[in-house]
Image (cartoon, rainbow, N blue to C red; front, side, top):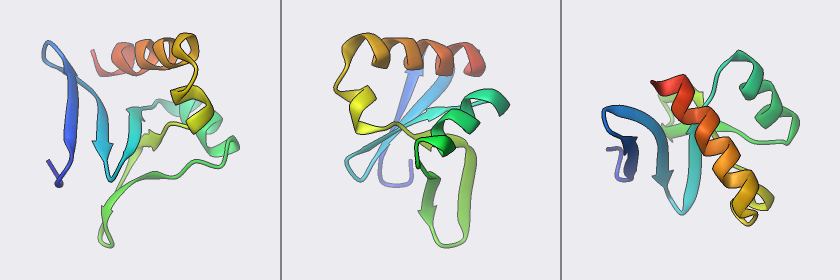
Length: 79
């Protein structure tokens, strides 16, 4: 997938690992949180941008509890 990895739970596709970055599926509300944190949507090439997947900030990646919370949000949006 775009030279990266898709994250699934069963059939639900909720995340992407690409170029050493983690992206989670977002909804209208959660996307605003990622944008407010300065994160960008997933863009595997110059012609394609997936605006429903945003990069996860490093401070969240480094915080197990926050990471699990955000992963749960992404999974529920994907289900």
